Image (cartoon, rainbow, N blue to C red; front, side, top):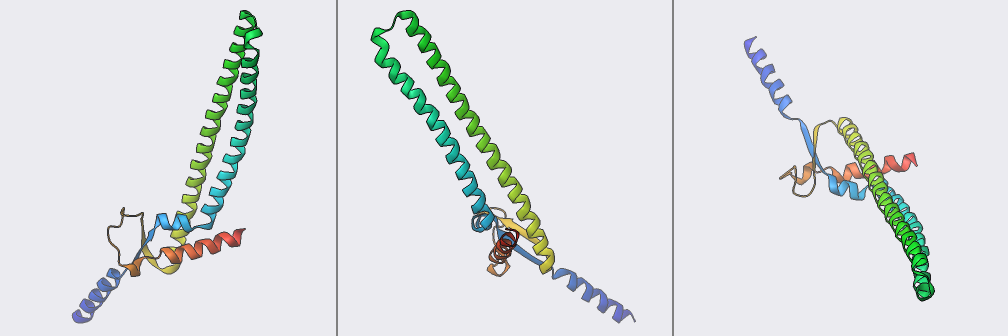
Length: 170
C-alpha cells in the first residue's frame, strides 16, 4: 500500500513538472498583425489630411506675407505696424494649430496602440488556454526571454490565428 501511495506521489509530481511553456516575439507579432497595418494606414491617412489642411493655412499665410512685402514701400508706418501685428497673430494661430494637431495625432496613436496591445494580450491568453499552455512569455528582440528553444516559439502560429480572427471580424 505504501509503495502504491509513493508511486502515485512520484507520478503526480512528474506530471506537474511537465507544464507547457512557450514564447512569442511581440515585435514580430505586432509587425505582422493585419490590424496593426490597418491602424497604421488609418493614422497615416489622418496625418496626411491634417498636413494638407495645415499646409493650406500656411500657404494662405505666405501669400499674405508676400502681399505685405510688395506693398511695404507704399504703406504708412501705422498701417504697416497694424498689418505686421495681424500677421504675427495669424502666424501664432497657425503654429498653435500645428502643435494641437501634432498632440492630437500622438494621443490617437498612443490610445490606438494601447487598445491593440490589450486585444493582442487577450488573444494570446485565449490561445494559451486553448492550446494547453501554462505560460506564454513575451519577448522583443533581446529583451524578456534571453534564450528560448525554437520549438517553444509560437509567434508564427499565434500570428496566423490572430490574423484569421481579425479577418473574420471585418
